[in-house]
Amino acid sequence: MYPYINLFGRVIPSYGLMGALGFILGLFYILLFSKRFGLKRDDGIYIFTLGSVGALIGAKLLYLLISLPNIIKDLPLLKENFSLFFSKYISGGLVFYGGLVGGIVGAVLTAKYFGLSLKKHFPVLVPALIVLSAMGRVGCFLTGCCYGVHTDSFIGVHFPQGGIAPSGISLIPVQLIEAFADLLLFLFIVWVTSRENLKDYSLYLYIIIYAIIRFVLEFYRGDIVRGFFFGLSTSQWISLAAIVFVGTYLLKKIKHKNKA
Image (cartoon, rainbow, N blue to C red):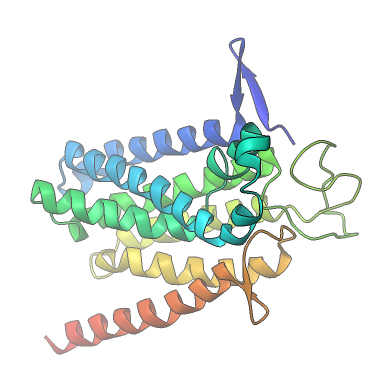
């Protein structure tokens, strides 16, 4: 819709702006609620900030991995049109699950370096992560990436010509649907963190529920650069793996806790 926004006389990419806004809102959440859980604000900010750096790296690496066949095909562009190659594969393109893994790795390493308990910070880090994710999807909508399939229903939107999404047809705004689902998930996880017997499970519950949401929404995605294996996208296979492995791990933790 609006891939670039004019802000104070400067043209800023919408996705980057929404990502920055999501990061700032995540920081605010940590600042506001850390004391409620007996946590130091600085510790949560360190983990969230460096975890976000890890998320960017992971999201880009998975995008490059999924796009590898196209990258190999477009290698001649390095000499013929480097700016086009750069815009297609370097400046843009992030995959959420790569970001999630990269963010967790970054958070684990940060917590280990500073001698902090990552689990104790789940109640503030997980809601902050969801806020960041939701704003990222709004950025996707404004940019026109991650668009939905064609629809004749009233919810369809039309993207302008010259953008990433096809123009002239009505598309499901799957980006906004996911952002709204993230909002509901955020409210649920905030409730989970308010329960003493559940707050330690917030990250696992988030991953499982998000994986279910993402698996379903992938059927309504229209962009083709997502990788497909046996009829399912890369993100759907990762979603299934997350549901199975994280779900099994969570059940074991609950069973072990009940025995103790």
